Length: 168
Ligand code: S3P
Image (cartoon, rainbow, N blue to C red):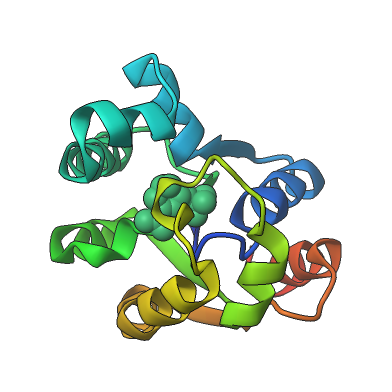
């Protein structure tokens, strides 16, 4: 079986849907953000503060390269900024079937307001930041996606069920 890779903006449900999909399909689940935190021995917030965003992006690229040579058949959830680098988009396409969980800015805002673990959204007006970032990122997510799923209204369990039935 190929890998299934979930991409999309922060708060779109990548980790929850990925974990659930792994459970119902019996596949291994891998959350890239958590794996990078473990490797670095610090949280994403600390990586951004101490080493900077570029260092975090390097870690993402290095980890994608590692995954290319690892065992296949995993469900992989990614960090929301992974497709920003052209090289990452190329690596994602090689790694398996890429599913983009598409959500509106308002959905993201409702889900993540008050969250203190996402460095890029610690600002005075997170909704505007989300709108601006999505405008730039949407074409990039779409560029590397094999499949696009609208994930605003539907229950996350239902989406995992659909992926299992239609794609796995
Ligand atoms: C980021 C998304 C985060 C995490 C980091 C940067 C981004 O992952 O990788 O804070 O640039 O959108 P989630 O999408 O899992 O929140």
